[in-house]
Length: 198
Image (cartoon, rainbow, N blue to C red; front, side, top):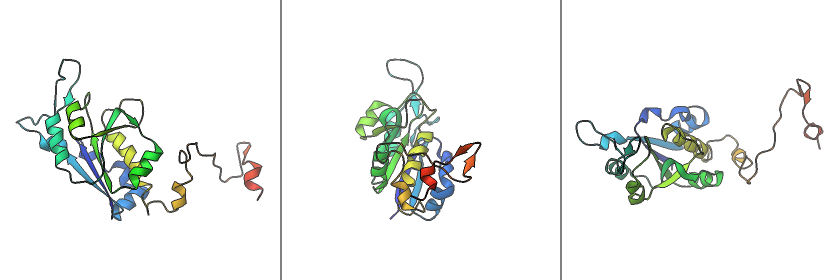
């Protein structure tokens, strides 16, 4: 059974992006994971199909409307958790990525503008996830980062399954330094312990 990914976005053309290449792209072609995009604007009403409005109480920017986003979310039949990519979310960890990769799938909601109406976050029980303490133009790049981390852990994606076990952050520590040929590079040698044969 393939890992089901659904992405709710105003820019579906941004997907699969780099995930259509290399290992992730081959895994997508081979059905190890699937990708469906949902255009949030399709659930807006009126002549202009507005997905956002001015913030209640005033302030700069615009806020994604709860009613429009709720209709888009309700249209999705995906058994996995519903994650809203948000700079105020819980920081993403490798442990969380591994847990997500062991599930049936995930629904990713890509916010835009100043944010998403809090009522839809609560009403649809969205889990807010952040990829770092900085602001992006929208949730799409963050969704691609999260998917990249998940997809590479799916069974059959990496050529050597052990590669995903002995990596940085898997044991809570950074991975050790790596070396390869040539034996000497600009006066720097590979440490003796790695080439001594012991």
